[in-house]
Length: 497
Image (cartoon, rainbow, N blue to C red; front, side, top):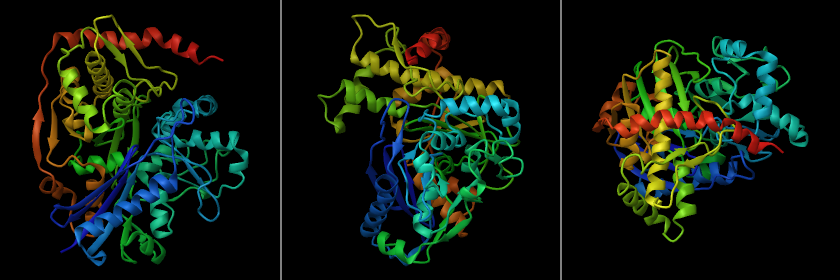
């Protein structure tokens, strides 16, 4: 038997799966970790404790529990939260915590500075993306401007997946899909790094070598083999961002296919025939040459359910809390008894790209219960998602089919409210474990054990969620949009010194 290993590092949890050549999961493992928030608007991970240690522990547990010989594992693929920004010294050692994706908004000043200096139209033309909190370029500039003592020691700038691959193989590589998030340092037309727009951020020599996601980056080194239990010489793919691997895991591959990931954030990827360049969305080359992807994402989604549990359900154990909250939310009617919720707890990414947006419950009175608030929170995330779907329609890219994946698919209220408010059906496949399964599949493709069409057999469709027309949602969605617009100036005033 031949096997492939996939490991994904998420915002709050890392997961790994060992899969045979027909897509059967032989063993799996998971490890939780924290997202560090040292101050408002910042979000970090510890690269060795949260990324590499999780990979090592998960791999060792899978090998122990599966009974599979390391030599039977034909390839390894990783994915991780991204895009992140991590400076390394000349010996490849991290110089600080990894700065996370768009949920970290520390570079708002650098985004404005670069956009004004270069011009949004020029950035969009060359990079395919406007500069937002998702962009790595401004975060590198933030490092250079605010941490000169770290910058002086920096030899390389990497992202989370790059760091994992480096620890496994000694190679410093990045896939084109992830690299497109390094605006304004990546030229989507040339499929290469560029300093033409901003030569004062970082020299391209500091950036990883570019590859496609299913290319082999290198082999497990003897040192990594001793630590992980893998066999030295095992092929390791370039890897990618977790959301891309998640999309692969449910069969997102044809133009019009849209993956909707219900995780710590809502993240959306739609495969398109041609590049979609709109400042409200993100663009990247897809995982293989000639394919394109249009992306969107909320800043906080599943993260909000964790926040709510930790603040308003402290009397419950973590194991039982979400079940109790779900039952209480079911007792609240659609519309949460006239409550609106803005889910902008870390600013917002697409489509408003406002790092200063704030979260809010609106419409509270003395009759409201915890169940009303929790339902309103889920519906607020669904309203934000509907705003994204509306944006895809505006740019002429309505989804042909939506494939839902991630832990949030187990939350029926959240899933149904999203279909109802956005007016779209959603497909849920048998395996919703997500990115780690997609990684194992990409590893299989990389060494010829599968092709992209095989995913339908690896992960068949289980059910569909059909939208229901609800007058209360039709009434509340425009009010949700208006509530943000009406309070933008208040949110900015709150940030004033």
